[in-house]
Length: 396
Image (tube, rainbow, N blue to C red; front, side, top):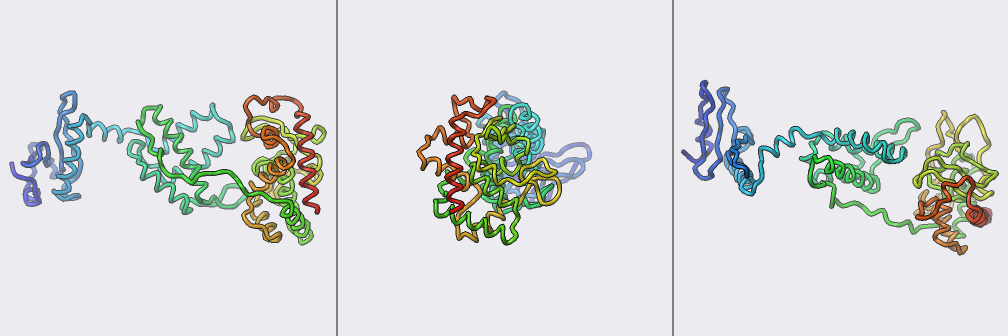
């Protein structure tokens, strides 16, 4: 038997009567197989830990050089010597579901376990980012390098596209990438439970830490922000956008909670909002009276902050905020800074972390007020005082 070289491979001829094998003299178990059709492949032959003989074709002749094939053969035979089964691994990958199929299985399974809003967000990230970038990959073949590349592609905006409905664009960025990788890690843990894989390829992939929000508006900045809101309204800025920003600052609500707030959820008489679904679950949120005073007048819309066109709620709030901050000369202000300003004001007034958490709608261990029919009087009193303090500063 000769050493497998290019000259030897080029000289191989098919036999119409059956397969032709040529084995290498340097690496036992490495060879070339020529089919009656003339198709030639590099192969390895080995025995499994159970003593079964396996034969695995791993590359077509002509796609790699004999030396490259020899290196690959050595790797596969080495793995077999350690008790692995390269042929079974390939079959497992070939018959395994794709990432797209896994995501669909995960969503169906999660539908009965997680909140509808969380499920909708997961579905959006899957459809916008995961499926377009790695959806066709077989799960066992997915590596941490693949996940890392997906992260960098999302950050670079490669999956950005127009949104459905109210317009705008789904963008990338480190935050979006980080949250998508975190979700993918959860999906891969689901794959482990289903025995599709044994290790999580998303584990250990670097993600930008979310961190805590440190930026908030001090009293002077709140006054400048309030002046900017009044001036902008006089100059024809969207009244709904301004009202939404003011409401966020006076209540500490999350952006999504305010933007998609149904009018039927308002309970002015009891100084609260009756949320059906929030990040913390179904709950009541105590709201100061002054926060209700600047809301848009009711019109033929189910939303507290209706869109300028169509039947959907108002969108485009980040752009309105950017214009207001430019007027006020404020930097580093995001919509979440308004929520943090509410919390910082409450802390300045001496309220405890537990009380502030209740005002912000945090899910607190041992706190059952979110299941009550009426808001806690102490929370209502605190919401009244905090919102009144912020309103005073806005008007200064």
